[in-house]
Amino acid sequence: MKKFIKKINIDSTKLIKSVYKASIVMFVLCIGIRLVISSTITVGNEELAGLRAEKLELEKQISGLTYVNSEKASLKSIEDRAGSLGFVELTEKISSIDVSFQSKVASLIQ
Image 1 (cartoon, rainbow, N blue to C red):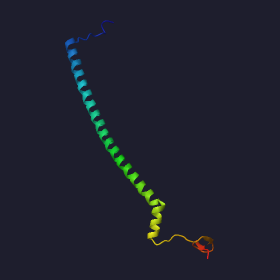
Image 2: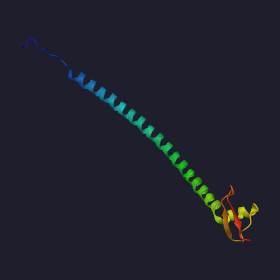
Image 3: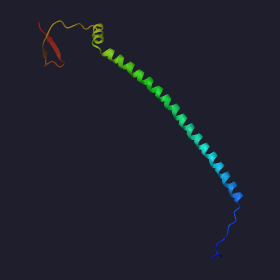
Image 4: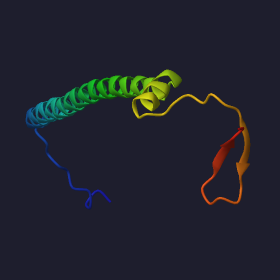
């Protein structure tokens, strides 16, 4: 059985040097990968900050438009607009609505 086993002579200093070189290469690769990942995350954070600022600006615009919408929908605004268009305030009571007429028109008490 001893015939079939081949003895390999390995110089221990060569082995140590090879392992040392391989570990240095692995270390440099790990640092490089870490730098790439860090820069990717940094760019992502900058984009996120820009999107947050844009979101705040849009929220300001929405709140401003909501205010304008509520202002234009207020009764005072509608009354003023109707007055400027020539509408007058109703002074008599409505007695009935003529259903037979195609467009619904209220008839006034006379």
